[in-house]
Length: 398
Figure 1: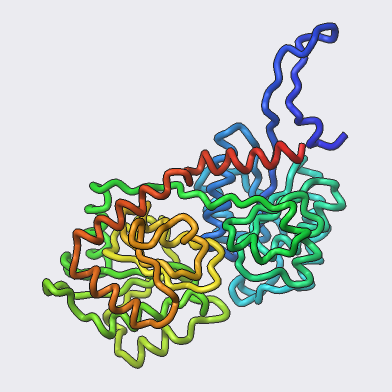
Figure 2: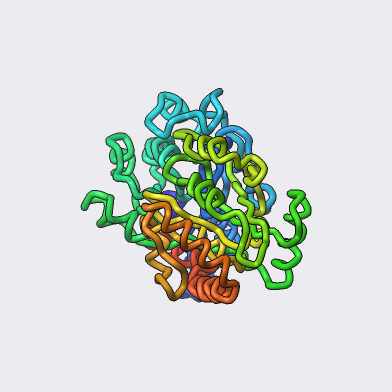
């Protein structure tokens, strides 16, 4: 029998007695990552691993090389296993496609599955799907593929998906791009939101972040969050700041960019900063943790991305007590309703984002109402509930 069968949870009182009790099965799950790549998807995945641990399971975070994934997992108290790095090239300089080093990791990945006694391998992104599909198949362990993209699978990804025992799509939008054969083994489970910021803490963070950035306490702060790639369209913030210098009540308006540059780079952001002379009015702070602290400090968060399978940014903003404008090209709109929980805008034209931002900055009561209603839409996304849904998928595989 496989390790999965050994963990089926049947407990016998004695050799001659009937089954006295039946426990829910527990699993040892491997969560592999490229150690030098980290984003919102990793946050969702590690939140899941932590919640599964709290439910009695044994998640193990496997990172190819050290880096933020390993550091974040350690901070959460998760077991971490370091594997050889996939490449000597920095994480975000590697394109997201099939690469020889993914095949080269076969021996180390297979050995880790056997050595650690993993019952399930749960991959979080396309790179890890390509890397771990074959090791899991050879080790005869179920592979669960978390499908976190709104783009259809490539040939290499499709091949790896065929070996998956189950697929978890993060929205109906992401599920819709899968071929029929993959859709039949796919369930939609929305990403978890783990941290809600109290009103009192938000007031403290608004002052603390502004002081850290050297800004006056009354500054209106507009934020964008995420890796600085083209489809995230952080350059929309530059257009907003170019048109809005002060709020109607005289507060200076400043932009906050939280995220690292990655390929394909959002060149328009840098071009517009230079063209509009925004170097002093846009604060580029790079990767920040905990992200909810920085979101809580903002008056408004913009989420103008396209091809967004889910989009944590607006939901994290609402959980932080901050209103957000959301792109209609996002899976998050499956949970948020226009003019009730938030304002949903098409990605284009950009002037609609500018005009709506100006309108909101002139109406603080409306911004507070949007933030409150957005937060109320998140109640079913608690980490424990999310882990319970994934746990049911694992149990079905058993």
